[in-house]
Image (cartoon, rainbow, N blue to C red):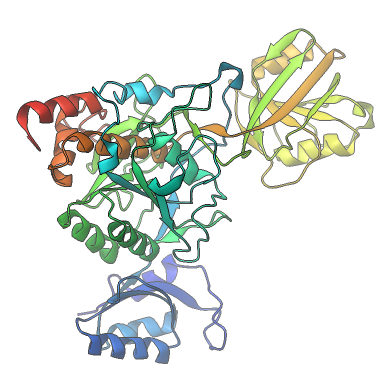
Length: 521
């Protein structure tokens, strides 16, 4: 029997990314796989030698019996037949599962309580999170801004660096992990930021960084290794706001073993707006989390399938991002105050000048020199529109929608020197009647943002699981899982369904159920 988990032709096709292998003849034709050894140290030694002879490079040793290897594609089939090797399979990619360009809250209101806190009943338990010090949540993601004003510091927060080359866990270059962490445990401080499900700095956190600061993906191998780091750190709950479409048996086996060890693993269902299954959420030992909005309506991007187990807030979720990484846009024209959307990548500066019509912004027009450009969306990239305004002498840019509604834009990494924001179609029409009036465009750096995604729903469930479990530490992880499912607020069609699973996670209902019926009943 072929010991590859799928045909070699598919292996080559599905991993089209080439890795440079110095000193080999296969530099332009390689693939990344997981190689599983047969039991015993002798087999491992033989397998490693065979990998080297085949021109492979071991990139990550997962557990001594499974390794991630960059291997010449032409060598896969022959290596799979080696007597010391039990399996070769694709090292599937894993991605963060958030969707939108960050937008920021109105900070003049002081501390804000995200709607999800009340929706999941995190504020209804008798002693809140007073007992949470007996639980530890492991967050596998892009890191944790250890300097953040509204996140825990000190002995209750630990981590692992550089899983698969991701870098320092205390640095979060993509903002994703810090946002997830804030939903779990942003600290309750008067007048500061937001609050998490576990807001009183009692919960223990362990951070494992798998996504690098350049926004690259991770692999099944790095996720498996990270999950083992969580176990070694003593985690009770593993929170994974990530996934990918391809399953992996090594990864599945890892989570099966963690389940046996009493650890509750929770992952995002995916944002593909389809019926596909995302992994690790699709494995039986892992809870799959769907997303809802603040009206408890199913988020249309949330993947729907039989593996969806439970749901939580995942639309417009307000949480922490690395200090200064968020942006708060503002716009006034004459006496009118607008509510603009964010243009990701805009410098955090302000400008005031007469408002001028710049049309579609697709050509240089020096008549807007010294003015704020009002630009209609369409034809070319936002960055080109803003650069054309800037190169025409404009001092700020407002891009308004060409279809109904507002939007969040992005400059796509292109550097500009003028502030830019977005506006709805109706706001744009109103501003066309205000040309010549003084417009003030401002972008202020902030420490918080709204994100969408099943990535945002997942930490709500992870935190509720730890919160409820902290009151009943003698329960097993699987019993807590069953209690959460049985106490969820049923939504959609009666019973478990492909959109909501068992329903909206409810902390107080789960607490009451266990208190009345015992663990897992």
